Amino acid sequence: MTTQADINREIAELRGSGGPQPRRDYPPYRSSMLRYPTRDLHQVDPEGVELWAPCFGAADIDDHEADLTVQRSGEPLGERIVVTGRVLDGDGRPVRHQLVEIWQANASGRYWHQRDQHPAPLDPNFIGAGRCLTDGDGVYTFQTIKPGAYPWRNHDNAWRPAHIHFSLFGTDFTQRLVTQMYFPGDPLFDLDPIYQSVTDAKAREMLVASYDHSVTAPERSLGYRWDIILSGTHRTPLEES
Image (tube, rainbow, N blue to C red):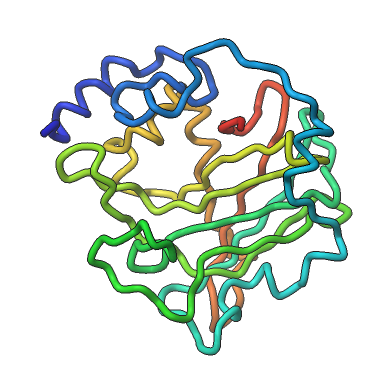
């Protein structure tokens, strides 16, 4: 079994070897070889794809979908947080009415998914998925629970830092972009090959939210701010589908 020390050495050897976007062929992330394309891409008809893909409009989004703490019959366990920010283009202009989806583990580090069977408790009052549309200023806001770290078997004693997955759909599903938001000061950053697959240090920092006391809700939740930039030299690291 590969050890954390082995992964650390590989991460150190590859640090700074790529650009500001995640490396798809990143050996410390063991399953990346099964995930990135190794052959030439084939163009498809976007209209044909859309015949088979779901689609959403503003009328399909309920305001309660952005509050992951009220989607079940009771209060979920864990630290309540607000996560907000702006979706911007490369010139700093707001991307309005953009569909933003998130999914995450619960406070114990377990997903509401049948394939996640590691021995952490499920929370019957937390599904861990939500969505919203950005407003006229490109702002999104979610109420949720701070996720926990979890093991993921990339190597011996491998743990993922706490994170929230973000998905943005552009104007249709063929434009979907996926990324992850992390929390400041996580001790697992240096050990995690997925986070470290963004080998440019300044680009990695763009994946980390900042604590913002003005976003906190008194007596209820702490607040984090994280902007998503879709293009340009300061583009947020994104996994393109």
